Image (cartoon, rainbow, N blue to C red; front, top):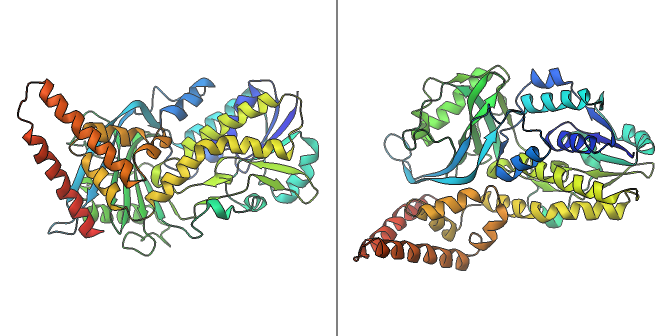
Length: 449
């Protein structure tokens, strides 16, 4: 059977390694850390995975923690209005039901567990921080080299695709804290949901239930506009100080979230993370000094900002697409044409994520503000936006173009009126009142934007 080298032991690298291993391929996995070092290290991401990505794990029987992790059954959006006494009020607030539940499993648990499983099943793991010179030698010993390590020297093999990368500097400064002790949410008790809090001009604040090394927890995640008031974590190395700043920002900008967080504590000393990077799409084929080729995987070639929560989802989808392409290739060579075609297959889904993410990094145009405001009055809108996190391609139908957004909202209002009539409400004048109410929060956001 053909020999394949995968460099990188994250979501995509391990999922692909385990998938190929199950099909009888001879796999070598290179990682710069052991399973124990990963498990005992610092958190790596927020990793909320939606239904489609979870299904890719289930198909390979890798959903080891599904029964233990919180079932996230909704996604909520709140938008802060202009400052007022006592902080910023919410001018938009809703939660949409997910058609299939999502989950967030701390990657320290998952990556360590998957690596151990790979080894137990006979896979070879090499603990070494690979450099370009290493790959130059190793490429001659393998039929295919895949680079799934999104940081470090190896990324330099893959040139930036300027046509698909509108930003060349970071658009958000990221700060994460894993906590225990977050209080219940009064708006939807009993419903676990990811909450996206948008603070115009400041950034975004996310709260999500998760499973971590010490059990169920919640993730607090700031995405700050660089140079803005929430960009406050550079140089902070003490985990307690990091959490203190997260909470201070919550208290002022999202007081409705802070009210639940007065008794939180970090899950562990490694439960914080901060940093920033420029969202970048890269060319998929890396050429080694000796003439060998390497194919980039997941965020090596498509690194989007976490604002839309798509990193682990995209990694799972990329691993699935690459697995299918490798299996279909049979005994034919993994040449450059095949590599580019394989990436193009993944790009068919990744392009929707990139477009949506880059859109959300810019100040929202009026039609998107109106769409988000409508979610407060129309559950159908809230549900459709929420499920777009699982299938971002649907945003093409109602999100980007003002005309499509207006047409969609007209359909929703007409359906709501028809439902009222069929339920015996002959007087549908109240629908106009709802539409007028929708405009009030939208106007508040526009004034703050």
